[in-house]
Each structure stands twice: as C-alpha cells, then as structure tokens.
Amino acid sequence: MLVTPTQLTLGARIDDLDLSCELPEYEIDQLMLLLGRHGVLEFPEQNLTTEQLKKFSERFGKLYVSPGGRAQADGFPEVMILSNMTREGQALGLKDAGQSWHTDMSYSRTIALANILYGTTIPHRAGLPLGDTQFRNMHAIYEDLPTDLKHKLVGKTITHDFNKFWEMMRQRPGNTRPALSETEKNIRTPAIHSACLTHPITRKKVLYANPGYAVRINEMSEKESDEILNFLFEFQLQPQYLYAYKWKKNAVLMWDNIGTTHNAVADYAPEEHRYIQRCQVMATRLFGESGTSDPIYFEPSGVAA
Ligand code: SIN
Image 1 (spheres, rainbow, N blue to C red):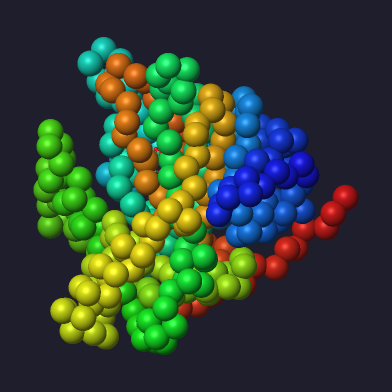
Image 2: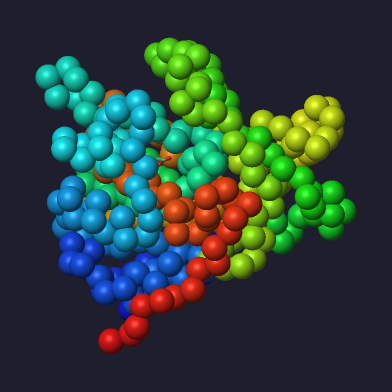
C-alpha cells in the first residue's frame, strides 16, 4: 500500500487503492492499523457509487442509521448527505452537521469507530478549498496531560449527552433546529464511558472527553467536574494537536472517532456548494455487549496474498 504520512500530528494519504473494488481482508486489516496510527486517512481520486461507499464502509463494522431518518441517500439509510445544496427548494442534506468540536456517537453505549466521507462537490474561493474538516489528536493530548491530572482521571467516568451539542447548535444565530422532544431524548439517552479509554487498535490511552457531548465527570462534585472538563476542553485546543484536512473533489476521508475529535469549518456561503456522503461505522468490531467497558483488542486476521 502506498502510504504517505502528512508528517503532522495526524493524517496519511493512500494513493493506490480503488475503493470501488472489494478489497481483500488483509488490506482491510492494514487500513484498521493505519487508522489507529494516523487517525485520518485520505484516499484521493475515487469514483464511487453510493452503494460502493456503503460496501467499503461496512467492512469496518456495523453502519449507523440515524433514527431521525433525515438526510439519507435515496435507498441507502446508512448513507447521510452533508450538503448546503437544494433542489426545487428542498434541502439535499444536513447543512450544519458537525460544526463544532465533538466526537461522533460518544453519547451512545456502542461508540463510533470511524466516519467515512466521500466529497464530490467542494466549495472553492480564489482557487482554494473551503469547508475544511479539522481534527485533534486525542492520543497526543492524553500523553501530554499533566501527570497529577492523569492520576486524578484514573477510574473516572464521563457522561456524554446528545442534547448538549444539539442545544449548542440551536443557540447559533439563524439556527432553525427545534428543541428535542422527550421522545427524541429517550431515543438517544446519555451514555457513560471512562474518561480515558485504551484504544482497541493502538492499545494506547486516549482522552475520551469531547466538548460537544461530555457533560459531567460522574465521580466528582459538579464544581470540580466543570473545572476539569473546562481545563480538558481548553487543553485540546492547543495548535500542536490540530490537523486540518483540505478537501479535494472525489476524495474519500476516513477518520478514527476514538482517537480524534473533529470540527466541520463553516467558512463557505450558501451559494458555495458542498456535497458529501457520509457513513458512520460503529465500533462493533472493537467493543462487546457492554460497550467501552468491554474492549476487544484488534488483531489482524486476514492473510496477505
Ligand atoms: C461530521 O461528520 O461531523 C461532518 C464533517 C464535515 O462535514 O466536514
């Protein structure tokens, strides 16, 4: 496999894979290892149908289907459309997905392993791409935490709540999301995970506390929990942990949702069009029935040709 690391805190480009073909199991295993090592993988110049994107994505685990049923590709509920485009006055997809720092599905007992996005319309201005997807390296962030804080976080758990991100988005000027109903809240009840997880691919510790969904360190007073979460959220913002991916038309971007957080940069106008298809791969290969308290460490199983 032709792998070119970015030499930055995250990211590698893989040039010689055609994701429309069914890859052998040993290559899927290799991609799992690369995902753990580099956090963000770019596959440039792909030519995929929606079905091929889905087929590639489901090799890594079960695909998430949003219970809201919004913004799904025709005939493919596992593929969501992220787009600011409209047809005959109807939105083609979600226009504000992921526009703040977060980790997808941390509010769920079974967390997400990876997002796999395929971008076919990328906004540009003055020849430069807009709408970067930015990432933070949660392996490096854990590594660099002050030692006394690392000790303090041992055995601590964090509650993650879907409603936190939803409300944050609702507070933005012009946002039209309605408040979640009690029924919607009950579909996505908050989940609890260890503050620091051992990543099942790298077997190294990551900080699992993202500003989008983490609301409370359960074993602390509210005051201490707020102080420490605020410290952790600020700490993550240091520039050395940042990697910004600049989109290229027809690239597939895959990222590790356990070892990174991400943010979709909304720096483009409504007439600057963006169209991306997204599959969300759940970590069903890496955690058992009881979620993150039941890790299944990744072992490559495929046999090289
Ligand atoms: C997301 O999956 O959070 C959206 C990322 C993006 O649109 O850049």
